[in-house]
Length: 127
Image 1 (cartoon, rainbow, N blue to C red):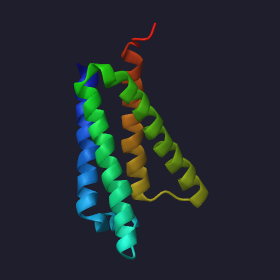
Image 2 (image 1 turned 180 degrees about the horizontal axis):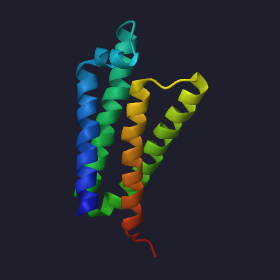
Image 3 (image 1 turned 90 degrees about the vertical axis):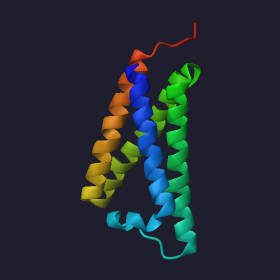
């Protein structure tokens, strides 16, 4: 039950962020992520919008469908782990971490830790 609740919350969080950026890609300017034209707006909408919406939908699918749950938690582990480690390494390479990066690391790190805990608590159906 706790895993389903976490996944529902996580899915809604990612989907809501995706919708926000899809509708207003210029909102990312607060994090120094800016577009200089239509191609840039399209990329921000695709990656920060569409992909985040799809990630949220996948997580919600895992919350609703028991047969998907473990696989979705594994996917979440890889995707969140990759994003988290990419930010850590990127900030180290840049020699700084803005307040946005620190917030994103805290957010993604907490979701990654919760995902790993849920994965550990979710039995494998494989024999």
